[in-house]
Image (cartoon, rainbow over all chains, first blue to last red; front, side, top):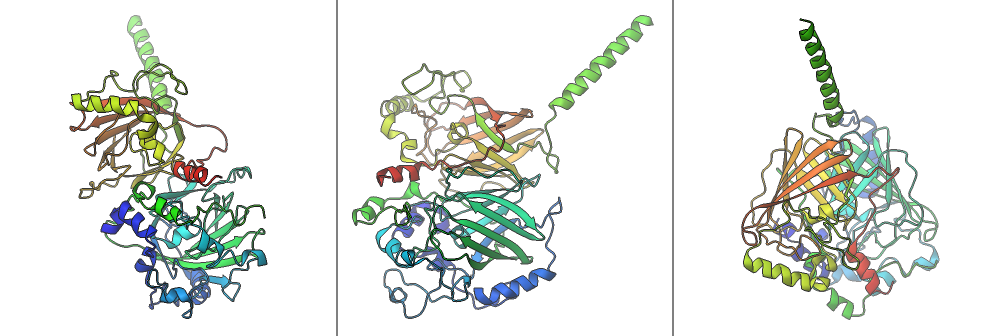
Length: 304
Length: 249
């Protein structure tokens, strides 16, 4: 609680490389929403459960996803998972924890990078030469935001928008639920331009216009400014959302691929999102940049 | 009798006119019967540069005060600090560091913001620095302090058609404008948002800070609805833009 109250402490912890999220999100052995606690097994089980679960409704009759949520079956190290024989598992500075991939398609759990992008992604050029954009107090980005800390989904009066608020660096996503024309392609924003619709009981969020300045994870896996991301949120019981993220980016992958984890309701009495000012408490940026590490603004993929 | 009939007719006419006028002015309502403040809003004033009367300077439009009575009741020491802030504003203004600008300053930055409502919460989402104000209208009190938040802690309630917001727990690191007007971490605000028609909100904020001011004082301004078709809140992240410039992008 104290940690969450203090942007300064948090910023310092992030900069010091402490895997704060990993500390919070020890992988559960217990089932999640009645399904196995491994993304590849949770995924088909949850989709099956969704067929028979009738979600609560808002006053206007829409599935009611409102409330506070936290990512589960997720970890911040790598969406491709962490194997026991990796050097970082034994790191004294930032030990990674062994974890299964969050990628359910392709079945090998690997991002289908084009050959040029392989050495840039997981523990590659990004990781070794660039400052994690989240450490630099940028947004975690889509979908990394939803695996970090707490968030809140609101369905405001009139059903014109869904608002998704994240404690992580005070980030908001405003999801327009009407069929208005998309933003011009020259307008790039950190969390993309998001349009939502209901597919039965599933909230589908379609996003583009990303600036490509965000990573999927601590290891530097990435997308570019041509990414097209489709998220699907489906309640499988009163306190669990099946969260599926399909990523398409012809600039960097050979095919679309899919991530899955769970969002589990935060039930602490009186829980509220707190203000997490990051930049305002940051003190070590100059020292970090002094080591030769660079800001990440998509340089490794720019010009592709 | 004839006279009385005419009077009654005129009275009835007047009544119906004032009734229809009242109907025209009654704000739209949410499903739970509260005034519907949702939409994209923006000020059309120069308070971001200077909340008081000021002549034009290079890059600064002239503007009339949003401070009621124009005078801010600084203590003598605080007035000296304000003048010093003004002299060093080019580097001392926290805005130049890309930090969250505080409340009420974020309300009159020259950028749009969007209001959303549920029965429990009024959420304001700002294009400037992706700010978020969560105004709880569910009857909960301020949390137990001490806390120092850049946008404070906001608890709201409806008084008739006015949203009244009590804001506390600030830092002493934000200013009120680019002219060096400032406050301490003892700042306490009471904001009143009253729709005056479908496209206007009257905004009044009472500013109280015994460390800096000798008495509470007020600002008043209007939020105008942005009606451009397809308008969306975009992104102006001053810190990231400064980092990009630093990286030579």
